[in-house]
Length: 580
Image: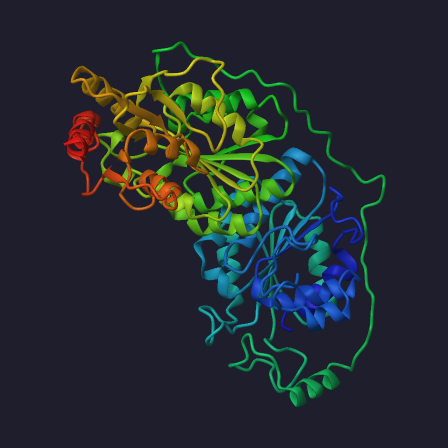
């Protein structure tokens, strides 16, 4: 009720949107960051004629219906899922980046924010990047109704402080009475002609329009009793059946240029040459740049993730987001809204800062690709703050995700190419150090697969690794072979989905004796994937799980792998133990 006047004015007079053609690339975008106010956006959908009275009354928050408690893209007029506060504006930055720099179409991105979420740091990351990229096509409307879920917000109606903060981040602040239709209209019109991002700070009353609830605490998320609802409807003017639509982008309005997707020539590598998978990531990404829908983003570590290779080749499609990992992921989500293929990279450990954004990306059904470098203790002297030891568990837990962990440059390049056509959230874990190329240029790789690098009819134990531990497993297999022990070695490059068939075949062939070595904490990584795949096999299993079980420190990669118990000698000892 607090934002109803603002939304009515926006939709009736300023939102340029063809409600019968939500896929029109010239449409404005409306992102409802305060997703808990979903009855308002659903009422707007009813007012413009795309949702019926029956659906609005009987389908809200009901099992199997579209009008969920917080908006999701199951509705074609919703770009992103909201409800986790502080995400709508960062997502809007990504959509606005696409409009200004890629689509080059003058649609506007309108984001409705609540005042409670202005306490989220991600909102200010968004305003900072919006100002840096001069996103004059981005307009945030903050519903400053003073009351949060449990009482007053941090700043209440101190609009002067809000405005100073907004201006300090480089955006334009406009303070209005959010129930004065003329003032709202003037502010929205001014935002359309602005030369920098605009934040409209609308002073409103929670429960506005009904005297019994206006600016009253205790009504957050609560329906009125029936008698109170009747009084509210009467005071608001009674039931009406208005159909109101605003302007639409006409046939002469600019549209984006068609996307070009030519054949891609990936880099190739000599067998045995030492190449880091993070280096192969950058080279493969640059090759993918021949497709004009591929976009790269990085968090100020592009000379380590090697996404700089793409940036040098295609600077117009590379976005530096600096050290702002939440905005990094949100910008990727926003770019995906416009049909682009975003690859976002940083050190793997730092994606943990953005985990809620990754989780919400899955709920938004966004197609984004994440690449995390510097994984595990293998990174060496930098120490534990830089070592991703939780990332496989984190990314595997995301609904519908794909998790890939290549062990050499060839597989890394092939998997980067595969990621471009994956749906959902996909994650590539890369290694800092350079290791020998194991596969020729014609070797195929696909999510859900694996590679068996050592195999014989006499195999008695299976060694499973990925990334750096695969190379350790191969060295261990050589040691065991010299002792007369035949070991099967599996490159489990696809951690999710996992190649259950190959794992099952290996377990049967080697009497259920399996050693899994991973540069990761024990929980949720390779062994979890392996055991999950074999859980219903009915086979008796004897498994040795080698993982990082203590807090590491600085050292050389060799020292740290050995101290963690995941080096070749420890794999050999585990295999011997199984064979005793």
